[in-house]
Length: 113
Image 1 (tube, one colour):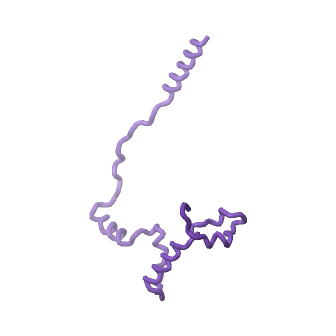
Image 2: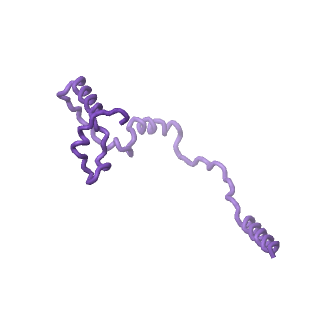
């Protein structure tokens, strides 16, 4: 009984394999353009200079440059102070009610933490 099932499955797989065949390769399609290289070259140069008409930057305006009243050293010092602040890596989601308790904001650095 087992052998007949195996033979039936083999016969069905052969029929399926014989019925399925891949497409034939037609090769490269022939060029059917009506323009010569001399006609297309100026159009290609104009299209290259026009840029990408479908890009996101094509419809975006250039943002104006904003002048800052703070010098670079002051901004750097503020960033360093914020990076060294105790408890600066605390996340609100880690606490009940998503509120960081006041005592957690004033953590001091301890050994092993």
